[in-house]
Structures are given as C-alpha cells and as structure tokens.
Length: 409
Image 1: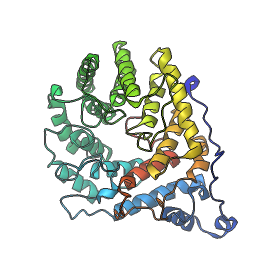
Image 2: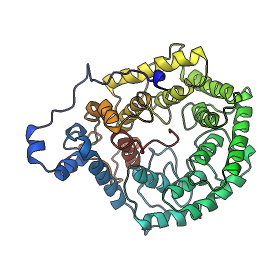
Image 3: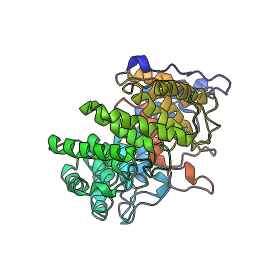
Image 4: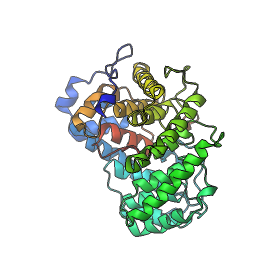
C-alpha cells in the first residue's frame, strides 16, 4: 500500500492561516475551559493540542445526547442532528442510519462517546416499525442492524439481519444507499458473525448480481458517488475481492468506477470543471470517488485508473488551498486527504499532525460562531446541519485510528 500513498500539500499557502492562538489561553485557561471555547467556536480547533481531542469529542457528543428526546415515539433526535444533511425523511419511526437515530448513535460510539442505555432501548423499539420491504443500508434494516451490533445489542440485531438475509436480491438496485452494495458492505462490516460460511455465501451472491448488473449496457445508475453511483458498488467489490481474490471482480470494479468518472465529466488526467461543494463531497462527489480510486489502484492493473487516481488525489490536495464553503465540504476534503496519505497503521500523532493546521480553518460556527447542536437551523443553513456528521468527521480527523467512516477499513 505504501507505494500508492500520495504526497499532498498540507501547509496552507495562498489562503489565510488559522487564527493565532492567544498566548494567554494555554497558560491561563484550563483544559476543560479551552475545550468549551472550541466547542462554542470561540477559538479555532488549532488552539487544541492532541491531548485535548478526546475531551473535545466527548463534549460534542454530550451535547448531541442532551438533545435526545427518548420520550418521543416519532424520532429520537432533531433532524438537524442526523449523520448526513437531509435529502429525504426516515421511514416511520425515525430509526434509519442516514437521517435518523441509528446514524447518530453509530457516530457517537465511533467517536468514543458513551451512549446512555435508554437511547439504545429507543432504537430497539423503533426498529420494530421498519418495514421488511426496506432492507437497505441508508434508510432500512441493514443500517440499523449494524448500529445495534455496535451498541452491543446482538440479539436485537440478529432479528433484523435475518430479515435482510431473506430479502429477494433481484428486487434491489446496485447502490450503497438502499441496494445491493450497501447490504453487502453492511454484512461485511457485521460483527460478531455467528455463521461465517452463510454470510460469505450471501455476500458472494450479492457480488455476482452486482457484476451481472454492471455487465448490462445500462445498470439503472444515473447518479455518481458513493451513495447512489457506481463508486459504492466498486467499494463493495473491492472488499469482496480482498476476501475471495476472484479476478472477475476486478472487471466489475473498473466498470463501476468508469461509469462514475464519465458521469462526473472527468478528463483523462483526472481533472474536471470547477466543482460545487456538493460535487466534491465524500458521499456524493469526487472526494469519495478519489478515496475508492485509492483502494482500486492497489488491485486493478489498469494504467488509466492509476493515472486518474494520482491526478484526482492531487486535485483533492490542491483544494486545501481554498477549502470549500460549509463545514461538511471542508471536513470532507480533510478526511479524504488524511485517508489518501495515511496507512492503516499510521500512528495517531502523525495523522493528527497531517491536518492540524487545517483544523483551525474549519468554521464550527457555520458562519455565526455557534456550533449547531440543537437542531435550530436558520433559513438557508439546513443543508449544512447534521451534528452527528460533524462529530464523525472530527472523530476521524482528531480521534484514534479506530474511528473511521463506514466501510473504509
């Protein structure tokens, strides 16, 4: 892997550096007070040292937990606290991963925040309302089951997994959001696994169907990116290839990525027209595609892929000179850069050092010096909300190597 790591620019150049940390802060301010100032957005994250990061993440998580409403039956958290900026509503019960309780709780655990038992109990009850006809990852059973496993509710998760495993695969599309790729990835991430042989049989069936769909002239995929495009299918096939080493999977990976690159309008050098923040995002745009290209370049012996990856990675790094507007877009670019330039065993101190200067340029206040953890979003800011997404991003950037994005191992 190491030979494929890309050297990217980490020092801010033509853009403003982080605000200088007042000299009296570290000398006269306690660690807890300094963290509280950072959570409020009154000082930049650059003011924090690595030793402050766990306390910071815990404080952000605590504020998210304080906003929970376990007495309600329709939702556990305000919509603005969801893992992802809303592009749709959860099914009845508000339990789903992308925009509901499961994603928020998964992010809390990933960032090392202790989740109160009553919140886990709420998710168990809400999961009973999910329809058996919605087995997908983003807004269905697979995402909730994955979260319940992570919360230690293995028996409750098992009941959901059984429904997922029995669902007819031919009724599903190929996407990560609600189709074959998402279910396959969730099954591969599932832990503990009580029947490895049965799980692998199911995953291989999913892989064969994904390959069949990709071989068709039109797979029905019109969007690009991790959630809704071919990139999600490529990521699933990459993880499956790591287990089976079936060379047929490599052709599918290449086909899936070529479709997304064509949809995005990338040229042969990996560069494209000017992007909006959404087009550069991890979940929907080029940052996420570049992360999967990074993995694919280690297995797929195609010159075009290696060239496209290196060029796209350079574009991703260059974007640090003018980080896009909005916390999610900025944090997403930093996450991608950190991922492209780190290996699985890179020490945490080295990972933190790679992005520390740029952490100071993240606007936690979303323009008004107030970290939105209450769900009260003013007009025009709804797309930027999603406190669980903020926590997960910060957990990956500032936490230990155990905190990661779903499905990036």
